[in-house]
Length: 318
Ligand code: UD1
Image 1 (cartoon, rainbow, N blue to C red):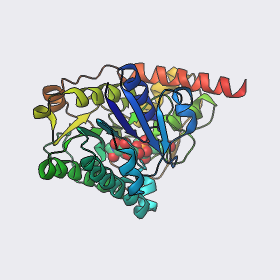
Image 2 (image 1 turned 60 degrees about the vertical axis):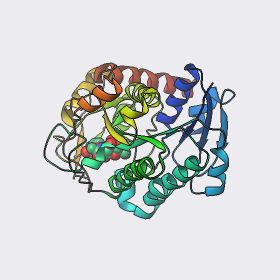
Image 3 (image 1 turned 90 degrees about the vertical axis):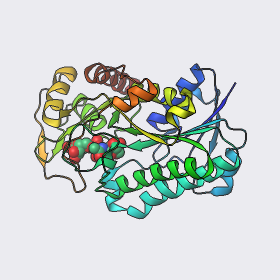
């Protein structure tokens, strides 16, 4: 039985990964500092995991938590472009310093592999679509720079110390348990919860910006493949994880109208600084080396997500 450490386990992606690793028969250790994660995301699995409230900035605690760990899924981050524009120091600490601490501790503890939640934001505003991993990165926000720095550290720890690392560039992930409550929340969590409450969503810009929105189950699947693929196929590498298609925000709003039954309008405001115009992944590399194929498409993922938020709000008000 392997021990898998999940950083950011109380986040919506980390908590989904924890459930999947438990189902795969792993022993799961999870850490979170609750800066963006939520206790309720892990409430129902708390008895099955070894949870520790640890901040990755605290190096001696990170060293301790890595003892006896076979694999790490590193999800902990402050995942927001606008929040990083407002506070680049915070973004750097939580996304870069924390990652370096984890890598040093992982190496000391002889961890077998670290899989890292990298970000499609690394591509920035380069016009070519779809985005391929061999394109020159062009990060345009502090968040994107920080996430890209993490990738480079991953590769450097493979090259310099032989620690097996894999970076997965997630493209706009959504799904159950994503926090809709912050102005920095992902657009789909915000739109769905507002529309279910009959409240007007806001589109920043003209709504023609497009994204490769990826349902969280695809991310869970890719992490499983990244953990289990032979080292010679994946160590030191970076892979896109997405659906390979894109949809603009105006069309997304129309799809959500149909799925939620919302009959109101959408409000437009000026574009957000640091925003990327279009994003879409090329999945060839992930297919070739990980055997990755998306398993859940946009509409099906949206349906499952909407159902989850509906049940949550019914539970809360019951
Ligand atoms: C970026 C990254 C993504 C990363 C995420 C972390 C890109 C292409 N993607 O997402 O990989 O995981 O940061 O947060 O860089 N919007 C509205 N109304 C709202 C909220 C957002 O119109 O109420 C717009 C934004 O201006 C943006 C789009 O929706 O154009 C998506 O925004 P968001 O969900 O915050 O994610 P990204 O910034 O694209």
